[in-house]
Amino acid sequence: MDNERKIPAAVVIVAAGASSRMGEGLRKQYRPLGGGTVLSESIKPFLKALDCRMLVIAIPSDEDESHAREALASDAEIDELLHIKPLFVRGGATRQSSVKIALEAAAKNNPPGIVLVHDAARPFVTEKIIVSTAQAALEHGAAVPAIPPADTQKIINAEGFIVEHLKRERMAAVQTPQAFDFMRLLASHRKAENDGKAYTDDTEIWAKYEGDVMTVEGSPENRKITYAGDMHTQTFHTGLGYDMHRLISGRKLMIGGVVIPFDKGEDAHSDGDVLLHAVTDALLGAASLGDIGSFFPPEDDAWKDADSVFLLKTVWEKIRKHGWKLVNMDCVLKLERPKFLPYRAQVIESIARALGVESDSIFVKAKTGEALGDVGKGEAVEAWCTCLLAKD
Image (tube, rainbow, N blue to C red; front, side, top):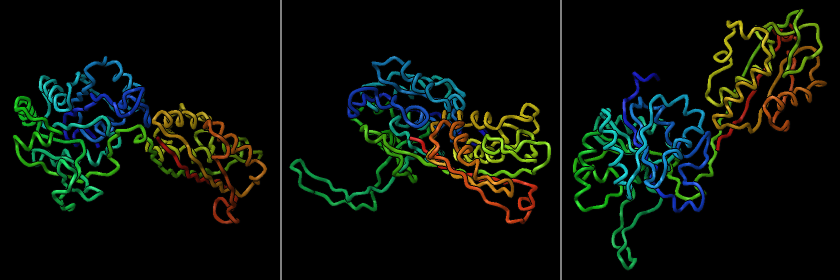
């Protein structure tokens, strides 16, 4: 989706907390996660989902902004997505004051009509939640993602006795991002600053001075990191790759980076390694980064007779920079002649070496065409690959 079709918005990221419950060491917003840090993972979905006109990051008041900049710079994907200069502000003693400081800073820079306020400690937010929240704010002025509480809720008195039994079906646990009409939220914060009351979030301030807040569907996965154990999560993606090449005389038969002795080889723009092409496409698909043709166009003479091992390594380096690692890969080679079995161990080792992984995470098996079709006639070779990638 190009920026002309995305909702223009300002984004405020609240990263000013002390992280006291995370234990010793780095503040939680700067700890490694996915392809970068908690902070960078919290920001990337907004850069993908919105036409982000302004990004304001509230950092701890006692901290140099270089820590936050380093936390963003450690994520290679941020470089591709971030086309505006982030504005760093030092937050206040409370979340409420930090958000107001960020809004005041944004107001000096011609902000768009909608602002989304998000906790840096929620790095698992999805683009779907962001878009639905922003759209609801455009329609209703204010919106927040919410989920039903998992447990039955009660109100207790000072002595610990239950004094009211609440109906769970009418309750919701709210999350971030919280989206609002920018100028109305800023006006509400200015009033709230001097009314003597402490507010837990921006929807409470809006409700006091502006009115109702619409809820949209949130997700249990959009959880907030509070303790070190909250960061232990993995995302898994599968990928499927396929390629086919005609076999002709005068070409080397390349399979998985290995030259297989034969009187024919693949007819292709590159070296024609059908198996590595399927592997490359499977990995790119699992990482949602495109396909081999988008990286190495067949009409580009730069890739004529190119080494497919080099192409695979180039792509894999980019995929790893996005935080992905290989769990396992399973391949099928369809070839009538020659027999593949004598070369299988060598091919598996070649692929593992190119990816920098153990060979036991790779497997390749071969089938014949049973004398049917182009493969069965010895005129073509086909390959399929399926892979599983994981990201912390």
